[in-house]
Image 1: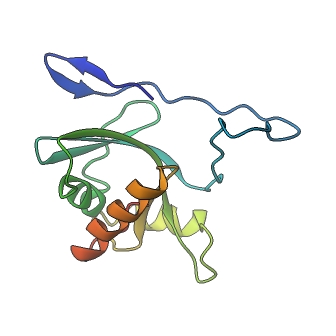
Image 2: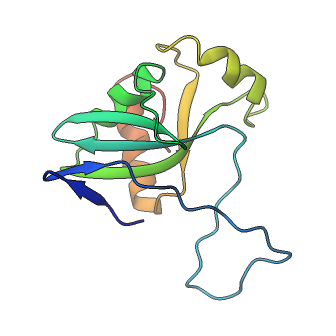
Image 3: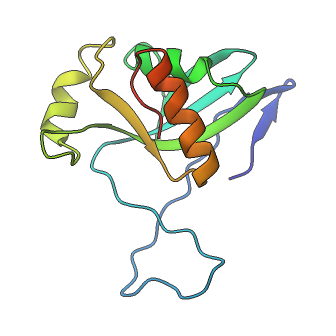
Length: 138
């Protein structure tokens, strides 16, 4: 995903839409990701601050307060993270009904972001979220 810069700052970019296929492509150049049952979310991190946007570009930072705080604490100059806001149920799988309930509680520790980040970034972001007692950014 390429970044979009307006007035020298990162800004919302349109999400890439997945394509349903019968079989996954072969070869090492493809990135596959798990389909999480949640709300598609874009985090924009810059200068120690973060914002969260919906698929349509609405600012939902106020609904994902703990996620935004955890993202702002990541050790990056600037980043755009395309992920899925989810709540994991007792089985460890996403629970959509629980997500709908938790969105009403911006400080909920149950809200988290799942992203198809490279392995190295995954461990870094998870550690940052856990260190702050915040929802994980994986």
